[in-house]
Length: 489
Ligand SMILES: Cc1ncc(COP(=O)(O)O)c(C=O)c1O
Image (tube, rainbow, N blue to C red; front, side):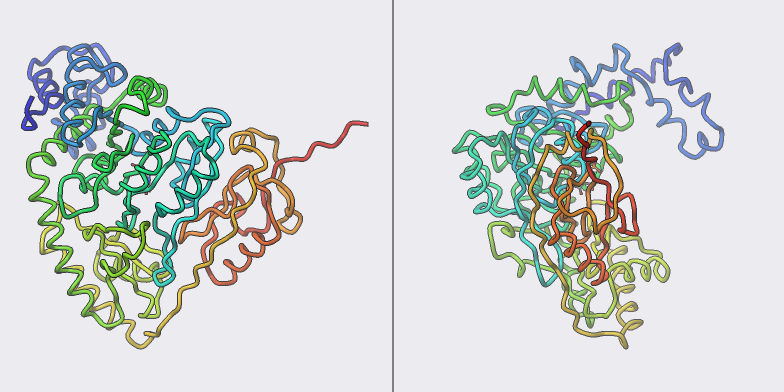
């Protein structure tokens, strides 16, 4: 089959054009039972392919027809041995990836600043996380990925680890020397799993960081919906055979996936793959040019700084994706959050994210010069609006000690718990996640022993005005801990 073909989308169109009389779910039956205002708005086309896994349309749980062909074309496009479609985002693909290689009490190396789906999978698996500190950029107040040296050191210390998980590239578009990390792990026959949520496009342009599959990683969970032009919730799990079994991945994915898979979402993956394979280079090339031009123009605006390759100086910060416009606003005397609100209220612009010191704007294959001009114009106006507050601000980025794990996060999750005041919590075992965002590094995860130093660290962060997140009690006076059993007399 050629990359020009879209077997799943074609099967849906062919089926719809036969106008079969439906006596199966979804009960809205080609839109006829949908609320009229919603039907009018979304249109009959999408509702007519909102179908279910009847024989002509194959089944994501055991693909043998159109879905199998669509996945095979995707595997070719991504340079993988197998590609699995996910209708549960990269979160679903990440959980599949982890649960297919680690089980109870298995060790897995992970960066401390992982997405919550990774910790969820570790809880489900009953695995033991071995945390690696990400590199932190003190100028920008953000965390990057992990270095090859840190992976090597961790693997020397934990040679029995069953997998290494890497976030690559990061949300901010910074990539580690992934090839070196993969080589280090593979020398020990340990599989490398990549959270590639922010990197679907990198495989399709030679001037972007190398993709997980190019670097020889064993699995990569990749959000096609974020930057690859498909619908929200659609992701792929790319697999290289050898250290992992594709059969095990398929059965794990099936265990975690709804039996009512959305065909519009699956079809959008099939068609996004075609677009990336055929036109990806040109579309991404255009986005890179727009972003590079915008970066230069933003760097001429007083008090703003748009980050570029000058921040690359280690194996954790080895390459970067220039389509991410990470703009530091700290010298304008405002927080990233204030900038986000200003742009919303004064320029009708919605950005990807903000933190204490920065905003992040994404330039994708969906952009044109017009949107970038509007962004730059708004940033110029924002710079003038806050001109009188401008000052040099030194970001406060502190790294907490990683506490000792007393029990697996899973045992902590299922244990009997109680809520006590933070002052009484020293020496007890945390039952919840607490983190400072940014840089998004957990201070405690379930199962870790609470220390005086880390309580002081929380306090210091609150006093510095940093957003401490996670505990049920958002005043941070109370913490949920594992209940201690009293001896029975
Ligand atoms: C680093 C990282 N990994 C994984 C995910 C999960 O991706 P999804 O939203 O497709 O489930 C995200 C989402 O923002 C993310 O930032």
